[in-house]
Amino acid sequence: MTGWERFLDTFFNARVMAKYWPDILYGMVVTVELAVLVVISGIAAGLALALLRALGIRVFNWLLIFVVDVLRALPPLVIIVLIYFGLPSVDIVPSGFVSTWLALALVLMAFSEEIFWAGITAVPRGQWEAARSTGLSFIQTLLGVVMPQALRLTIPPLTSRTIAITKGTALGSVVAVSEILGQASSAVSNSYNPSPLMLGAAAYLVLFIPVVVAGRWVETRFAWKR
Amino acid sequence: MIVEAPLIVEARGIHKHFGALHVLKGVDLLVAERELVFVIGPSGSGKSTLLRCLNRLEEPSAGSVMVDGIDMLDRRTDINRARQRIGMVFQSFNLYPHMTALGNVTLALRKVAQKPRDEAEALGLAALDRVGLRDRAGHTPGQLSGGQAQRVAIARAIALEPRVMLFDEPTSSLDPELVGSVLAVMRELRESGMTMVVVSHEMGFARAAADRVVFMDDGLIVEQGPPAAIFAAPQQARTQAFISQIQRH
Image (tube, rainbow over all chains, first blue to last red):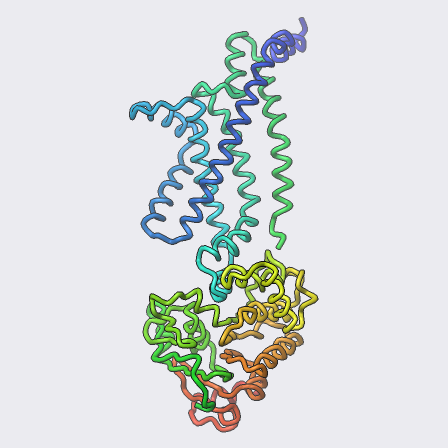
């Protein structure tokens, strides 16, 4: 065997790949499910918090800023482990899937709240004044005048942050979520061969390259064209 | 008072503090129906703040504001309903950039006056027609010149059929050649009998159209009277200094 053949046999072993590709495919389904749940719930919660923050309730906002800063400072893996191993002590036993979902959604919530809030504060004061002077209420102004402008500003940073956090689904492998990386690494230990990892890497590329490309399109489409 | 007519705006004893800054130091401003009051004064004299106290965009620290018989500072007053009666036009237009001209004009008609969409659009088009911009109804603010944008802003305010219009330096951010179109709309409004309070540096317009000129300095009304008297023969030293300064230009 030449060195090149040995390399191929180790990392791109056809026999191993043929055996484990259905597992990796199943992992892709789990990754997509997890990612979709994280994105929807995380962004929805972040938007809700930013709108609540706009109400200007001082004590609530202090608490909100504290929680958001903690969530942004902690590594997502630490939050996953805390939920997965910590909550059972109060008789809540989340699955690895739920723990990962919750942790990543909380992190995305924290980051997206900050992004939405930055968008809201970037809308000029005159917009509020013009709307209020015609008799629109605070809520009508926030939702009808300020948010449509704020959302446009938030789309580029929100897109890149969302992609970054979605890739964090791989952390679920630590708490036995059978997503791509989890499937790949258990296949590696069962087959004593790293080829399934190459399959896993390919699976991530198949999933995320379109997302990254779409993200770039969205970023240029919405960036500061006003 | 110059015009014997019922009062639309009655602001009395208005004080405004911004932190340690005492911006308004007890101002009375009474405006009669169909009157055009022109407020002039050096920058920082409090004239814009006074205007913004009238529709409570700024909360006066003390004093009372009645507009069209409504106590603007009473906690029980529905401020959003009251503000429908007070149109306001801003120096920087403040059009909603994500909406068309017609969308800008109809938003409050639909959300505040609760008109159905087709009725709001008919009223909105009529308002745009009045400022000569019916053909720009589908344009967004970015596609309008400054003068057109300010006229759309005026249409947005008059579409609600206010009892009084407040103008906060409406032409100050316009290129000189665009000022005339905005002043023409204001003159038309004036001729239709709209009550107006105008903070502006357009002294020519003040001379031609104002019933009364109010000169403010350092948070107080120093002097007021018909434009001819204020511009030709101001009584107070501070008014004289201000008038002679602006007339040098």
